[in-house]
Image 1: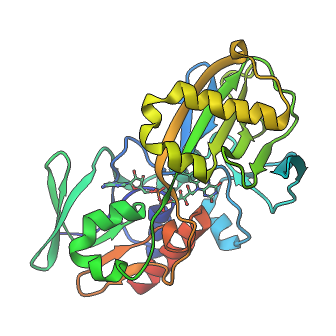
Image 2: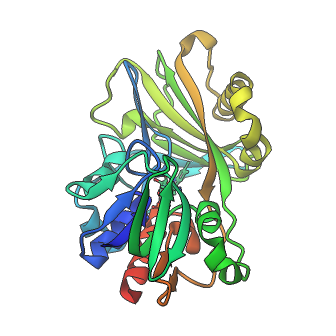
Length: 320
Ligand SMILES: Cc1cc2nc3c(=O)[nH]c(=O)nc-3n(C[C@H](O)[C@H](O)[C@H](O)COP(=O)(O)OP(=O)(O)OC[C@H]3O[C@@H](n4cnc5c(N)ncnc54)[C@H](O)[C@@H]3O)c2cc1C
């Protein structure tokens, strides 16, 4: 009989493992670790951080846990009331070879099973029986779920319905545009946060982050949509990519007063995150049922960023 199974391989799972200091088995539905701390590698183009952009944390314990990172330096602006103002935010932690490396490093030498989507969780006597999408089964004494809220709830509602009915944990979507230009836009900026904009949320010049871009002749931008635009378009985005790309680039070019010609675009694509972040913090940091031996943690319990994921996993590890 194995002891603890962890579902997911994002920041929460890595943080839980750091604090529990035991050998764990990790099950991940995707073909790689990292979850929403994700980097897309496009051949002959380069790397886009199309999930987590950077980490803001003053917590020295969190930085020690990350081990290998650097600070993103440059010129950061906020677009507010039609003008750019300085964004003197705190230090921004990234990995210069793509942010996914931040998490990948944390899973070195861990027992990770990839392409293993948990489909069903049942209690059989003292143990949990886990059934995966490929119809294989495993048994564990303790199960820890670290997926976004809706997925955690669907897997566990037979045990957790009364607990979760007290809170509003719903997560919001995001559309993330990745675009590579043949010629620089000459904006000389690292990133722009758009405040209260109908279409745009945040834009990052990837060239200002990464040492190891595959094609240094191109300029790569990752542009996130606003919440309003994401909610409007998330369910149909796959069938509507050319229009959405045009709309987001038009908005970007008008606001920042840069000319974007079609022939300057070498590569473009949109990734849709159905469960990107939870903007409301709730009253609790994690879920633990000591009789069942079922635990749940995730950034969404308290906000929606990597620092929340770390803090909430620490809380859960303390309870076990
Ligand atoms: C577009 C975007 C931008 C962001 N920007 C920032 C930022 O700038 N700064 C910041 O701090 N945070 C940011 N975040 C949030 C940050 O990415 C998350 O807080 C953090 O990655 C959460 O980690 P996690 O481990 O809790 O969840 P996740 O990273 O979502 O990990 C959950 C894992 O569970 C897996 N999984 C789900 N269901 C199953 C199943 N049934 N079986 C097996 N595995 C399953 C998933 O594939 C995933 O790997 C951003 C998120 C998005 C989407």
